[in-house]
Amino acid sequence: MTGGIDLLPTVIGVLVLAAIATSALLAFRVPGRWTPALAVLRGAVQLAIISVILTGIVSQPAWIGVALLVMFGIATGVAVRRTGGGAHMILVMATSIGAGAVVSIGTVFATGALQATPRYLLAIGAILIGNSMSIATLAGRRFTASVADRWEEVEGWLALGATPRRSTLDLARRAVREALIPSIDQTKTTGLVV
Image 1 (cartoon, rainbow, N blue to C red):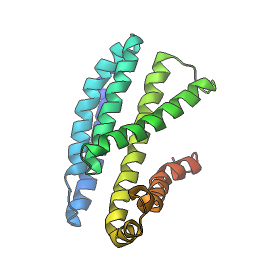
Image 2 (cartoon, one colour):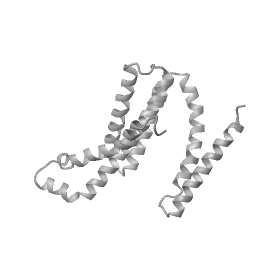
Image 3 (cartoon, one colour):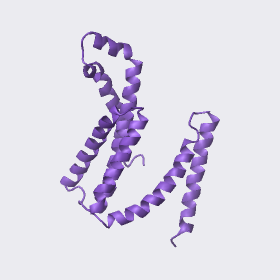
Image 4 (spheres, one colour):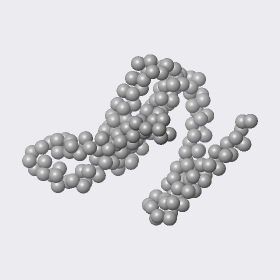
């Protein structure tokens, strides 16, 4: 049977998990303790709306590019906000997310790993844009924190005549490495940890 009754166990499970997460955060007085519950609510509304929109898009291949561009724009906006960056971070995040997604999508379809159908382009494109957003956000946050924590070192490099890029290059490399750890661990444990 399909319909609302099939969704009931899923809805109950999601609500219970959101309540557990919120309770744990409340118990430990973690800032942003309502964030998981609000994210679940927002996600449910978004998924309901998006599922209707995407059903129409998949049947209209010309709209897939538009959908991916909208996703890319939203991902860039989220990454910029999460890194606390201003207007100068828009180009940095857009370039990072765009490069990660375009290279990955291009490789997947160019090698024939997946058929270049509208359905796969939309699904894989969305996944890769989301992953690129997560990595760019983590790298940006880590880089910003590292520069703040090690400002004396950066200032020393600048005083010795180094360019701003050179004075923060090692910090940027470490930030990128740290940002990749969750994705690398997830890939390394595929099938072992699901």
